[in-house]
Every structure is written in structure tokens, then in C-alpha cells.
Image (cartoon, rainbow, N blue to C red):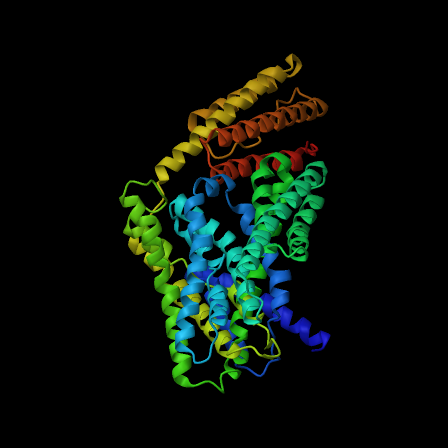
Length: 537
């Protein structure tokens, strides 16, 4: 493929991604579904074919997408729901892989059990993008969003490790001890590497004073976490997730306000483009998948597809009912409280690029022979992605609306209001500490503004009192007073940030509320700096 053609395809991809995002906003149709359909249409044209290189997907696309999702996740909330997250991210993928493996071993003539388990492991992890975007947009209770969030971040590691073990077993390299050792190395090594890279990344970030440099470092960190872990035969996916969770948790302490605002914008662009490319690639692969089925019997194709899709669709609600709904009925205070919430979690199992990247990584030759039924396994995996991504993606929002499961908006509003008030009071205490008698009028104005905010609990404080103070006040004095007001307000903002972090540490404010309130203060601080040319601290 020439450079000109590659550039044209890249430009077309960007246009399609932007167009899908626009259509999604106007029609409420999920953008991943629109992009997958666009990829299918492209594949049926005479345009140059784009092949999905599994190494490109795993090494280039997956790390930044997982890292961005981990940055927005709540380490505290995932830790609080670690039982539910662990059951879905470790238990369910392994059970799914085993069930699909035994089913395909029985349905497909001559298919080794290990090859069936390899496919089961490939289709086990759900997509970390689609369900989260829908769940957050529809306003699901935070605990359910956290479960989906934690599952989608961690299940890739357990599924891909199972996949690697199964492929090795097809090659004749299976042993119980070796399998256990590989799991321990993958999980333990991934956690260690991710924690080390996260600590080093936080240490460097804290010492950088330029917001642009902090954003550049943030873009490099997912690859810095992924590559060393993979070289050490550990889980690069898990390493990226651990690194992102740690830095997301520490971001209120180590990032400046401008860096948080800029980083948020940078990652939104990266997410939009990479997610769009991922779902376009899913649709484009259809001709490659269909071409490999010419030597398969129709009955075998239908049987293998039916049992795999059935296990993927029905295995999840059965697992949730056994591990979450039943314990809740017995008095365990878990994430799932009733059948409606069980249904909401059950339909959040869309598959995506992780599945395709894994199944396309199946070797063409294994132990000197063609990998058994490779083309059939690739087709079944592709079908699972289409059925879940299109079928569940298009019906998820209507289902959630019909179930009418909503977050307790009153409780969240009250928690945020209390946190905002305590932060404003902390700013007032700081104002009293740094008050200068020479600018008493400025101090009183700031104090009154803060008291007004406490009274009405407004979302944002405008940079008030920075203009005229009467004709008798000269320009130089007005400028000095304006700078004094801005400097004092910036110090109040920093005190309010500290108070918000204290609220999170005490458990009275969750990460979502912290980020919302912190973003308000970041915007206000930036407005002060831009209007008055006051340098950021």
C-alpha cells in the first residue's frame, strides 16, 4: 500500500469517526455500532483492504484506551466492590472459556479441547468502552457503573492469560504446574510493573511545571507500562490498568489545574480517534473472516456459532444470579440488589477489539501442523462481536430506560453540596490567615463572595470585583487591587482543593464528585490567570 493510499484511508477514518460521533449525538445511536456498520460497508466496496494486525491492536490501540479508562475509574470504589469485580473479571472469563471449550469440543469434529478453550478465552472479555459510555450516559447507579468499569479493566488480563495457556496446550506445552506458574507471573508481574511505572510516572509528573509536558508524559505512560510487562512475560494489559488507576487516584495531588484541564481535553481526542478506529477495523475484517470458511460444513458452522453465542449471552446472567443476586437475597450487601439491576449488568457484555485481536493472533501453524479449525474459530469470534456489539449496543439504552434504574440524584446532589460548602469554608479560613490590611476592601469583597456561594451553593464563582472601583482610583491602583484579589482567590482555591481531597479521604465524597468540583475550581483558576496574567502556582 502506497503512502498516498494510507494517508487517504487515514483521512477517511477520521471523517467517519467524526461523522459517527455527530450522528450519535443527534440520534442517540451508539457510535461503536455506527462505526462497525460503516466498516462493513467499506469492506464491501472495491477500496483497498485494511488488515487487522493483532500486534498493532494489542501494542498500539489497546494500551492508551485502557489507560484512559483507568484514569477515569475510581480506585476507591473498585476496591470497595472488589468481590463483585473479581468474580466478573476473573471468575466469569475462566468459566466462560471452559464452557465454550467443552461445547466446541463436542460440536466441531476433531477440534482439540484446548483450541476450543482458546476461542472461549478470546470471546470472554467484554469491551471496556461501549458499555461504560452507555451506562454513564443513562445515569446508572454508581455502584453498577463501578462493577462494569472494574470488570472491563481487569478481565482482559485473565482472559488473555487463559488464551495464552490454551494456545500453548494446543502446541503440546501444557502442564498443571506450568499453567499455575504462568498465571502467577502474568498477574503478579503485571501488578508490580504497573505499580512501579505508576509511582515513577507520578514522581516525574509532580516535578514538571509545564502542563504540556505533563500531558506528553501522560500519553507515553501506557506504553511505558505495557512494553516492560510484556517483555517480562507478565500481563501488559494488567500493568497498564494498575498504572492508570494509581495515577488517576493521585491526580488531584500531583497535577496542576491547567494540566488536569489540558489532559482531559487531550485524552478525549485520543479516545475518540482510537475508539473510532477500533470499531471501524471490526467491520472491515468481514471479508477476511468469510474467505476462510470455504472448507467448513454449514452444520458445523451453525452449531459452533450457536453454542458460542448462547454461552456468551446466557452464561453472564446465570453467573451474576449465582454470585451476586442470590447472595444479596441471603443478606449480603453487594452491588446487585434486585432482578432489574441483574438485567442491566447482564446486557452490558458487548465484545470488541480485545476479542478480535486475540483470535486473529491464533497461529496459522501449530506444532508443525495447521492450527485446528482456525478459520472457523475466527468467524465464530467475529460473529460474537457483531451480535453483542450491534444487538446489545442498539438495545442497551432502551432496556435501561425500561428498567428505570437511576442513581439517587438527591443523595449525590446533597453530597456534592456539602463538599462544596466545606471547601468554601476552608477557603475562607485561608483568607483570614493571609489577609493584608492594605487591601482590606479586596479581602472583604472576597469574603462576601464566598459567603454568597455558601448561601446559594452555586456551581462556580465568577472572578468578581476585578473591574472599576470608581473614577478616583487610578489605573495602577486598580491593577494592583485586581492582582491582589486574584492572588488571594488562587490561594483560597488551593485551600478548597485540599479540603475536597480530605473529604474523599474521609469517604464523604466519591471520585466522581471530587473531579466535578475540582474541575470547577480549575476552570476558575484558569480564568483568573488568563484575564489577569497571574502565573499558575
